[in-house]
Image (cartoon, rainbow, N blue to C red; front, side, top):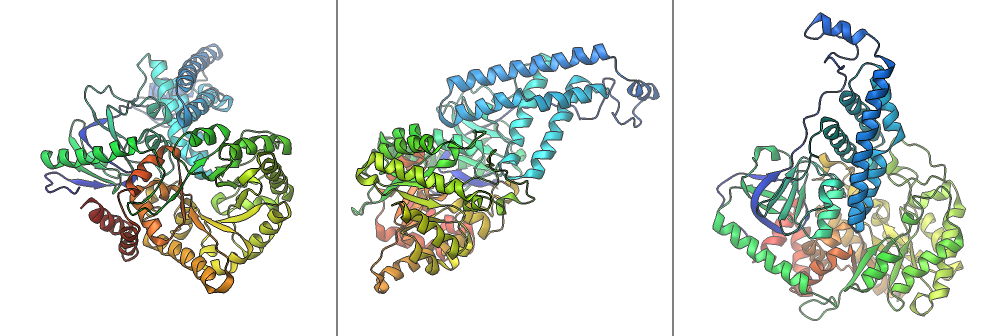
Length: 591
C-alpha cells in the first residue's frame, strides 16, 4: 500500500529486508570515546603542544613500569568481563546470532589487541586511550584488507566501546530500553546489539552505514524485521520522531501522515501473518509450481530446512566446513558431512557448491596469498591454482556421500563458483562426470553471462549468484556501505544479464539440442519477495533463499500468477535505475 500523504522528510537507504514498520525512532546510545593519541594527562602521545607546557612535560616522561602493569591488568580484566558476557549471550542465542557472538567473544580476548594496548601504555597513554588507539590500528588493517574483514570493523569498535564502558564502571552501551514498540536507529549495529532483539518491540531497523551482507541484515532477516542500511543523513531524524520505514524500497519517512502510515503498516502485518501461516508447497495463484529451495551451510541447517517448507537445497556452502580448520578435512570427514546434508532431502534436489574460499574466506592450509584486491583474486575454482587436489578430493567425498545416501542423490548436483572461462567449465564438467556427479557452474562472473551459450554444452545446470554478479557488473565492492546503492540486485543491467542467461539456455534447448539446462538463482535477490516475482517472470526455474525467508517468499508468490510475474519483469527491465525498477513493480503489486 502506498502512502497518500507525507508531512515530513524522506531519507533513502538500501532496503534489505522487506516490510513496513511504523513507530517512533529509538537511537542506539554509544559511549563517547576519547581520541586516540592522548596521554594520561591529556597530552598528545607524540609530544605535540597541548593546553599547558606542564602537560607536555608530563607526556614526555616515561611511565612507571608498575603503573603500566596495573593499567594493563585493568584492560585484561575489563576485556575478560566483556568476553564472558558475549560468551553467555552466545550460549543463550541460536543460529547466526550465536555464531557471531561467539566469534566476538574470541575477538575480545585477542592477544594481539592486548599486546597493542600494552604498547600504548608504555608510550604514556592512559588505559582507555591505549584501548582506543590499539583498536584503531586494527581498524586500519582491516580496512586495507577489505571484504568481510572490513565488515568486522563494526564488531571491533563495539567491543572497544564495551571494554571502555567497563573500565569506567558504566553500563554497557547499546540498544535502548523500549517502553513501546518502535524503530531501532543506529550508525551501525554489532552482533551484541542485534542478538537479543525482541521482534515484538523492534518493529524495524535502520542503519546509517552497513553493507548488504552485514550481520545486521542477516539477523534482521532471520527475525523477520524490516531493515534498511546505508541510510545517509539518518542523523537528521531525532530520537522519538515518528517514522515509517519501508524495508523493500529503502525509504524512511519522518513524521508521515499518521492515518495513512498506520493503514500501510497494518496491511503489511497482514501479509506477514500470511507468511507465518504459509507451510508450502510453493505454488503461484494460477497453480504454477515453484521450485523454492533453501540455502544451508551444514547438516544441522539442512535437517532444519527439511522440517520446513523447503523443496530441497539450492545452495550448500561447503566452505564452512573448512574455514575453522588448520588442516584440510579428510575425504572421509567430508563425505560424512555431505551425506548428512544429502540425506536430509533424499528424494529432492540438493545442490552442493565446491569450495568458495579466498577473498573474505581464506583457508589457513592453502597458503593463499595476501592480495591487493582479494575479491578479484584467488577464490572459488581458482584454488586449483594453489592445489588442484583440494577440489578433486572434495568431489571424491561428494560422490561417496551420494553413494551412501542413494536414491535421488546417487548423482549429486555439484556446482563450481567463480567460473570465468569455457576451459574452466569444461574441465570442471569432466572432473564431475568422471565421478558420476551432475556438473553445474555459478553465473557470477559477467564473462559467463555474456557468453553463456559457449558454457552450456559443458554443464547440466546453471545457478546465478546475484551477490557477486551484481558487484562485478556494477564494479562496486558489495561490502562497501557507501556503494550499497550500486550493489542492488534490482539494477536493470543485472536483471538484463539474468534475462539473457535464461533466454539463451531456453533457446539452446529449443534449437534442436533437446537438452534443457535449468537456470536457478541462489543469491540474496531471491529472498526479496517482489524481486522473486520478477525473477520467475524472467524465466528462472528455481529460487534458493535463507530458510527464514522461505515463508515470506512462498506466501507472496501464492498471491500472483505467472503472467503477472512476466508483467513485473517487463516493468523492471524497462526501468533505468534500481529505484525506478523496484518502485514500478511495488506500485503494481500493492495496488
